[in-house]
Amino acid sequence: MDDLTALRTALEGTDPAAGAAPAPGARRRARAHALARLRESPVTRPLHKRVPVLVAGAAAAALAVGAASLLLPADEPGGIPAAYAAPPEPIEVVGGDPVDGTDRLLALAEVTRGRGAAPGEGGVAFVSTSGTQLIRLTANAGDDGPDETHGYRYVPYDWAEWTAPGGEYRHDAHPRPPLESGGREGDHAWFLDQGSTSTEETLHPSLVWPEELPTEAAGMEEVLADLGEGAADGSPSGLVDAMRALYGARPLTGPEEAAVQDVLAGIGGVEYVGSATDPLGREGELFSLEVADEASVSEYRYLYDAEDGSLLYRDTTLLEEGPEYGNAEDYGLAYPLPSERVSYVWSGWVDAIGERPAE
Image (cartoon, rainbow, N blue to C red; front, side):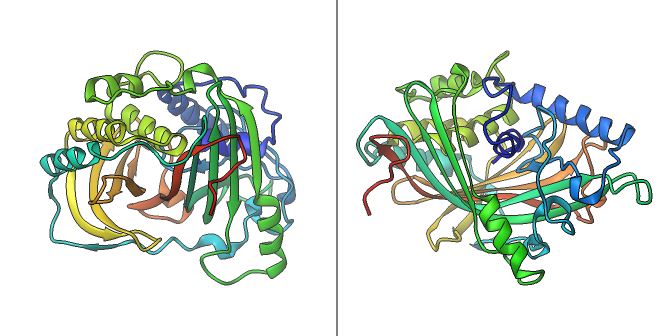
């Protein structure tokens, strides 16, 4: 879940800009502006009425609209119990130093190209994932405290997304028990109950993927760059952001996913890290890529099944940020900072929004 999705989920269907689809560059600029406004004019509200600014996932997914007021436990900044503070354990990787991974990824794409259609039947795209999201919370503590107080939580989630051909969309997010013990059990139960959300809307046309995706690199790169309103963004950060959205919303045939891998290999700087096991116990080949934009430098890693080339897992680590966009030290953190990890549980086609594949 990126900043915009997190905020719209908090607004529970009342977002007045639900149909807007800002381009990645506009979102990054809006985030910088929002952080600057917070520093210049901090809010002065009682603790239980703090207004959190959610910064979920990679920093390049920038805050695009205002912050939302949430009903929170009185003694928990941001409403997420302290037991959720622990970062996830890193996945197990077997191998030596990273090496150039371009040729290896292109070879894997040839394996992927031989895979058939995505599983399931029907016209609604369904993607089920699980993982852990870093959520930062920035809030003012009042006249007697500092200008801002900061907190962070690593919250494990189960996610599900459905998208119909006309752009009808549903996103379910269900937090799971905390990664460490601590705090009050009642707060955990409250968060698990209140944190489960289901959001339904009709996507802006620029966010709806074509019914048939290209199966060669040039065409796939064009589709990825055109995601969202505004000018096409074929920069490395723009392509990586679009791949993130594609994998989260759409099942892929073998040739379609091979085209995505070809685009990834063509960005430049891809490294092969080694074999690895994801949090669900699945083994694959791990590739990494560092991407810089105007806001940050992040490492993106992708774990692909060596047998059929399907994406099993991905994660993002924030390596550095520009001072105008924030600093991990402000949150009591240090770089490199794990910010997101996602395992792909099932991706395919179903008959209607809300339906899941038969067990």
